[in-house]
Length: 247
Length: 152
Image 1 (tube, rainbow over the protein chains, first blue to last red):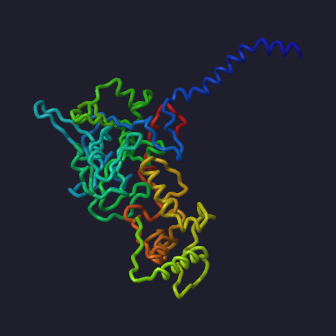
Image 2 (tube, one colour; image 1 turned 90 degrees about the vertical axis):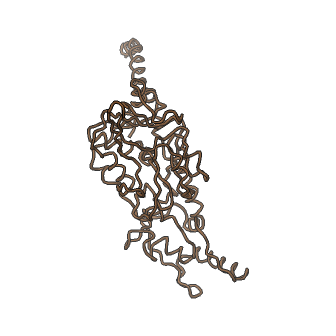
Image 3 (cartoon, chains in turn yellow, cyan; image 1 turned 30 degrees about the vertical axis):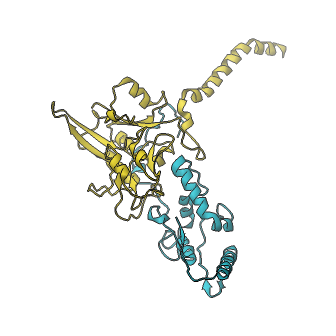
């Protein structure tokens, strides 16, 4: 009995080492995953600790691929039509440098600016920025004046002209309101990525990366630290949440 | 959001009596007929009971829903207790599958009886929804935090 006690005591150091190791593993995730706070409970609101952003690699964005647009339409219940009066939350653009002739293919969507002009001009406060940087329209108080559409340098907003039916229960939309990309806020709040990013990844192009810009451990923050990224119309000083690489 | 239809020409006393009458009716929903006006016949909802006591919900659902909508919309708080989506999930009618497609459906039945216009359904879905199909057809998206294996 005493022998076994002694041997246990002798091994005490090993035991402590082992338990420290176990504790380290247990604590590890919380420490390692700096952004774990974003796995929030439903009671917890969006926090300014995060800033959601997107990095789009135009060199990987395939010509003719429209998967992001289709996924957005399905997720948000958009018709998919591209007429003047149809809602488009994300559009595929082809841009050409007039001097060199180099062409780029990229998706254009709400850039989720830190200083959004749409929020500045809104007379009712319907156009708003959530604590985590997602720019939204509160349709309950939107009066459909469309000032925000004029203010947006990216033509990212659409106005709903006709009555709608059969909306996605998670994405209420209706006539008389302005709307735009929400970063699929209903999915982000469930810890999922926006539908366009999911579709881009599923198609194998991997041109879109979504994540928390404030979390240095996130893939997007790491990528933005290593490659040159561009804000569209950086001259406006809006500090966009959507960045492009390769343009 | 909701607007009580004006009834010009009604005396104060009549209105008070009508209010008291309406409150009494709301408190006793099983009462069949009062003063010649048929009470709306509501279909039994799915589930055992409502998220709160019936009378409280009947009286306060506008404020509860309005508060919840602002919390969700502006702050991203997505509790389900007073969520409109959850109301629809339990109260959608068995015939139409909707809360507002016919006069018998849950919301319309009471609101037409009370003469209160509601415009929730201009934007919100009146039927309990399935999530868009592309989400099940495609492989799961990588987590927002790829290093965090357990975040989903």
